[in-house]
Image (cartoon, rainbow over the protein chains, first blue to last red):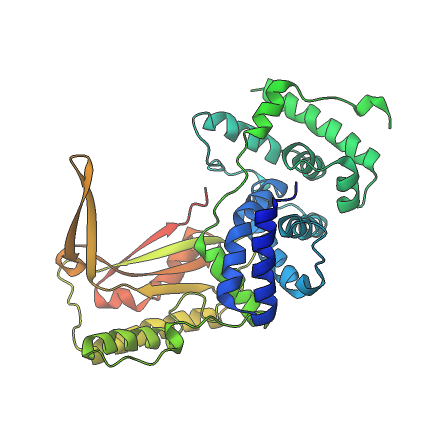
Length: 179
Length: 204
């Protein structure tokens, strides 16, 4: 899950410079390196709600910049940022009574090559899962987290994570069979 | 752990999940919003930008352009200048400011400056009301790129020469088209005979 050494080194250099200077240009470079990943992860975790995904990404960077000095590089910067994002999405899930606009907009789609329609179907089906199922399925089946890692992130047991994943996959398969 | 949850993905399911894209480019608006939020939280030092430069002595035209830029900035017409943070659950709309056919375009620097200030004040008032507004005045000069015989041909055009030329734009946030229209109705562009096209930004 962690990025390769080259990426980590480049991130370290940028972070060191940013910590030293608080320079906007350096931040923008960091932002542009990681936001495409964070934004898509946020979109998947919140089920395609664009404004929520943007809020989550913004809050992630705010928290990251506040706590960057304490980041010990035991994981890649991207993994650390993703952890902050996941926490934020969990908070948002708790805070919000899902609004009417939770329904996935028709235009929800993701860039993809030839088999784009299949990607869209899968994305839409994932987005329509209940929030708890969706979170575990995205983290496990898309992002590659282990159940132990998911448990630690979401403050649930590994067993609960497995159970949620089981139900999420079942719901996803049912959605596909229903098409 | 109980075996009842030990279901495995089929090869086809695994392939489909692996084929999902891993990154998606967010609109520049999000970057400006994040940078703005960090600045307000004093977590970021502003970059050296044209805003901080003195006008170079390279002639009146450049100086005038820079002046308009700075005026626009001071008046709050620039990207993210003091804009409130984005609210959850609102849409983003672009107000495309077009010059009507035959609409007179001011050439006198004083008049251009006055109008830029007027537009900026309108944007500033909206911000005071909590509406996020960003925008830019566009220069008249334009390059038009067209595909011709399999290659791209570039022509230079001054946009005032064409009807419905785009004079500038604003990006606003609103709950829906009705609210966006209501906001746009107050834009000074209308009183100068221009038209405003309102388009919601399509995130996907």
